[in-house]
Image 1 (tube, rainbow, N blue to C red):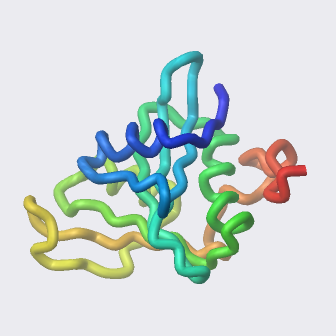
Image 2 (image 1 turned 180 degrees about the horizontal axis):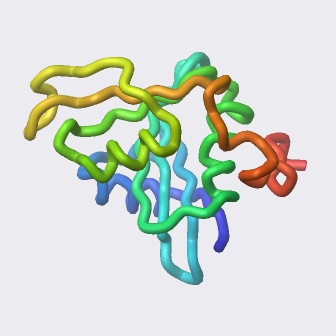
Length: 143
């Protein structure tokens, strides 16, 4: 398994979330197994305090979980990640809730099938920055 960052990852995620990826204003981080991409995250709407992320995955690893939270919290320096999820997407809701996100707001009637739930996570609540998830292998500084 290899962690990668390139426009293909963003396009891969966008296709799965039925969204868009803008290479000039977004960043994407993916997980490859051999030649196949198995997970990806798009980060967008960075404003120094927070960033919006979109997650698509078939498989996750501890190192990848560490990386997808290390990047916004330690490299970008945000204090909060915002993850919008359609209210009818039970698999995505389960995933982000298991990751530790919680619903902070509901945007009524903003999705074709109902509402959009805005899940958020503060850096202080993130369990993926500790050694259990790979911090000793992937320092934020890149050193």
